[in-house]
Length: 204
Image 1: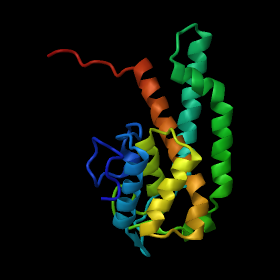
Image 2 (image 1 turned 90 degrees about the horizontal axis):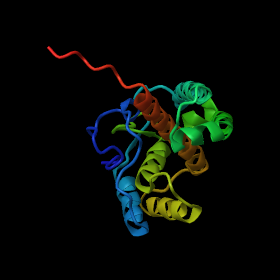
Image 3 (image 1 turned 90 degrees about the vertical axis):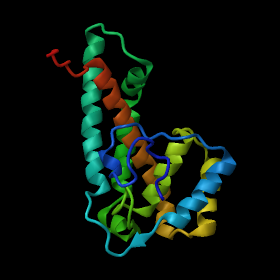
Image 4 (image 1 turned 45 degrees about the vertical axis):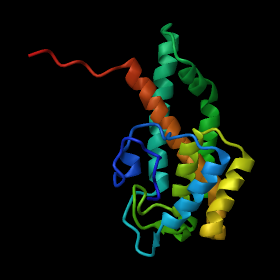
């Protein structure tokens, strides 16, 4: 399956963007990561008639709104003297960087370019660009900690089985940022949930 491991608790056919968990799976060694790239390339099928799904930029706008809400809530908590976690502190200190990355994604992924990217035929990311599935798996199996050489090895291993288009190669950096913003939004939602847990139902 093209999405194996990216969500440990979700059925294979659950749309990826419906999940709330941080995108994280088993951390692979370089060799195992290359093997996974090859199996991913063999499994990912594309279609000329992709499923109708929201544009990535639509999800990006939703993530931006959610991150702004989390940023405001954390800033308010700080002014009230509340203790915050290191993750929340990171979001406060680096929110301007996050917003800059979101702007870059919007600029680098215009509608015409997006339409030309081959789309996945099946799986949790059906209807979305194939290169997004590649980026998602890479982020999941590196726990968002990666370097240029590791990414190069992963992409080369993928291309030994299934070559990517020039447009897809250009889109790797863009879709990696899309997945990282998605992950950050999920982490921020988790922080907010921890600060404001759902009320318990009274015992009957």
